[in-house]
Length: 235
Ligand SMILES: [Zn+2]
Image (tube, rainbow, N blue to C red):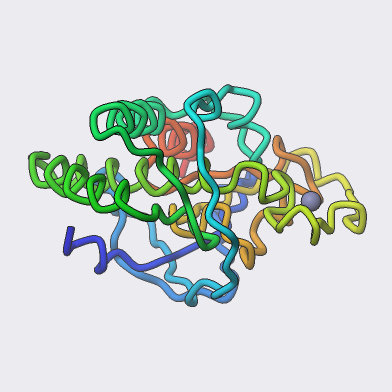
């Protein structure tokens, strides 16, 4: 998966106004030019490196390894559970049975550990190589990143502020309303998803998930929602 290393991190905030002139904001990021083919008219951003905090490895039981709509949306999105993320999770569960090893995660990035990691690494690289188009490869890369982060963050991160539960700062956030004709889209690289030092999530903590919307790069359900809305708004 060598091309993955070329995909630079980014987070951008796209306010959607009723005006014909789009406004673009970004936070502590740089532009990059790796975006889905269908969206080459838009720009994206790269981010700084992630924090190096670590946590104890946690085993994920089979019962836990299904993402419900409630759990998915609890992380800050109003979309349905992405089908490819669900597929990756199902594949991870099948691999557990095939090799009789439990998946476990360490660090704060949903990184797999141990023998399961070795086996899964071979499997996902083979899957990646089998995909024909760069678009499919990007979607698989994104879904796998997000699936692992979801499973690896369960019971560890607060769903709202994405900080370890013992560091939860939700009670300190003051909410307010966004102007009714304004909506903000946060376009986020999957490697920024559930990253503790990601400040983008503050947008929907403050303004709410219907005023500040998350679009995860490479997730078809999210990309479709955002670009459809831009098209509807005339951009
Ligand atoms: Zn919190």
